Length: 341
Image 1 (cartoon, rainbow, N blue to C red):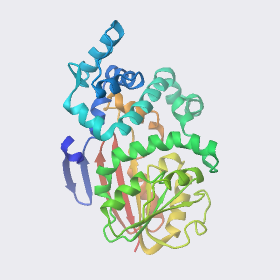
Image 2: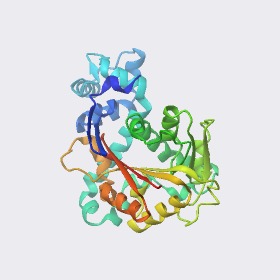
Image 3: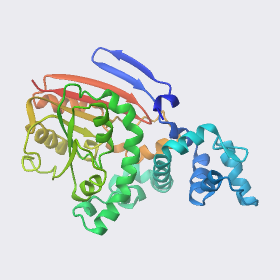
Image 4: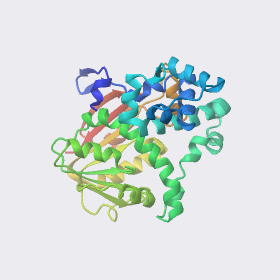
């Protein structure tokens, strides 16, 4: 189903900057704490599947409480799904379930460790359930255990990216581009989306071994995976041929400032003479958005940067022209493109 059916879209263009406001349809069922908790329970205890099959729910106090909460949350109208929830469930169930599961983990971390997040970030990262999910060291080989552990966070990131992609891909500056290197492109959810829009484009994803192996399970004729270590200063061994564009989507916030400079320098070296670097990242956490769904972003709030930091880094590499688009989803995404001529 076309995502525009669910959304009110606002476009404002000012000079070389563009602002776009959109929303993912499943987020309407994640914005309320008690509603999201009830929905999570309904998935885990089979209530959603029971309603889907048309079977009658068991009448007892616990079920009645849960049904009442689901009705108040807009999931049910009487004993049946509301039309809005039915559309989300039919078209976006894996996205909804993955986002909901992570949101519940993040909420538990915020309730128990919010002061640690604010004042002792290393301790928060060590103790939190959310950071425990992302075991990147488990992805360094393609054995069964590595694939099993890596798939846990790949599934979440793929669902999140699939939710974001329809809105972000529309703003990518890939017109006239033939080849793109996506650094840390996970299992390829974003790549599949922009390859569908730009029919002449070919893409290579550089990521960890287990991630690449999972991505190759869903083949695409114009997408290849390359195992590579982005920490190395020279990517020639991983990316032997220069490309038209290098894309960083939701990757650079994982790295401290000095590492970002090194990553961009290595990316610049793999560009053709007149290439471009595209950075697509969430901006700083906005305390004005206190919807429950935003708890999933709050746990990463210390890592998000303003776009001017990326512009300065690109300028230091000799970037001669910039474009910037702001896409307002669950948080602000900034798409900063630096052109080298």
